[in-house]
Structures are given as C-alpha cells and as structure tokens.
Length: 273
Image: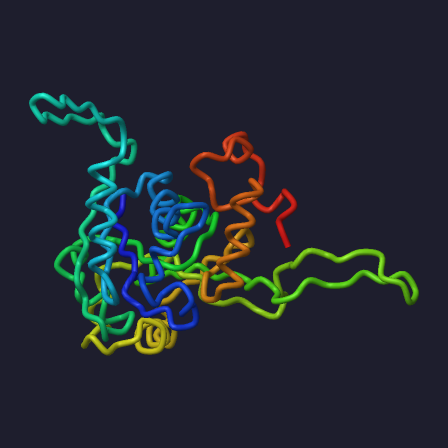
C-alpha cells in the first residue's frame, strides 16, 4: 500500500465563515471533519499511512487526532484507582502530522515531506474535497503509463441546475449535472519519487510550477474520473455536501455504503440539489 500526503495547510479564505476559527480540513460534513472523510476513503482502499502537511491553524488538527486516538472506542474507568483502559480504535491509521509553514505553497508543502516520501511511489490529495474515485484503478493506470505523475481529471459540477420546459411552461427543475465544458485537476495524484527533482522551494506551486512542467515534458498522465467529485471552497458547497450526507446519497462514502458494497455504480442514485 502507498503512503498518502494530504495538503491541509491553506487558509481557506473563500470559506471565511468557517475558517476564521479552524482550518478548512476540520470543517465538518455530517458531524465529522472533511479530512476524516478523505482519510476514510483512502483507508477503505488499504492506504492507511498518512502524512498531513499542516500550515494555518495546524495545531488544531494535531489536537483533533490526539483526542480522536484517545476517545475512539469504549472506555473502562475504575474510579477508585483512576485506571483507564480503552478498546482498540476501529481506524488503524498511521499518521505523521508535519508542520510545513503557514506561507508555503502546495508544491512547497510536498517538498517538506520529502524525507518520508522520496523512496517509493506515493499518493497526494487536497484536504478540502471528496470523491468516489477508485484508487486501485488509479494506481494501476499510473503504473501502466510509466510516467512520473498522474492526476485525476474530473468534470466540475455545474453551478446551477437547469429548467425543463414544455412550451412556455416549466415542468421541473433538473438536478445539477457535471458540466461538459472540460476536465479539471481533481487532485488524487500519484507521484514517483522523481517528482522531487521538480521541487525547489517552499514557494513552488504544485499546479503552476510542477504539474505544468511535467506536462510539457510528457511526464504527466490524466486518469479520467466520471463519477462523483466535489470540492468545498464555499459555504454553499459545504451545505451541499452536508445535504448529501444527511440524505444518504453521499457517493464518496464508499467505506460504509451497502449499495456500493453490492456493486452499484457511482452516481446511480439521485443526489440532493
């Protein structure tokens, strides 16, 4: 299984309503931080060794996982002696929470993780989006391409739903569909250690300085993912993800979805508007 680097250090200024007091990866979807949802997805595919690149309010992410490790499972307390014992945590994750600087760019944060990642293929994702991408197929695709890097290409969700007309009358509102205007970088990247040859400083942008150069040299593959993907850049997107979770139509919940376990294809259920 591969190590997973999660970029969790940005300020999340477009979600200022939530991020003034906490980092964006701790903004909750269904009562759990979006970072937890991301990690559950990777762990479902067997990737349980995480390096979380911290920056803005990173100490709160550290505190969350210290408390998480302590409080998960059942506790047995003997009040007379003060002895406390607990059952084993369900999530058997290995976490390294690494301070990568408040001002580092996305590429710079990966550069900070080099001592842990420079020996083997590894995965990278952002700490503010969820998807149902099949990580096993992604890694297989990457290895078949023989390139330094692979990114997951997605079609961004359309901003608005559409109206269905019958003459001059509106018969219904269609749900928001994915736009057909093109593919974008959805994260969920696979890198070979040679990617560190393209990283020079904490101010390097993963997108502008690294991926564009890899593309120009023919070293970047694109894995097309037509299933669910949603970032959480705005309060509206946070509310959308919460509605999906609460309505039981959260397609990214591959770890506990009985329909997904039975082989139902992604996106086959109606989603909340």
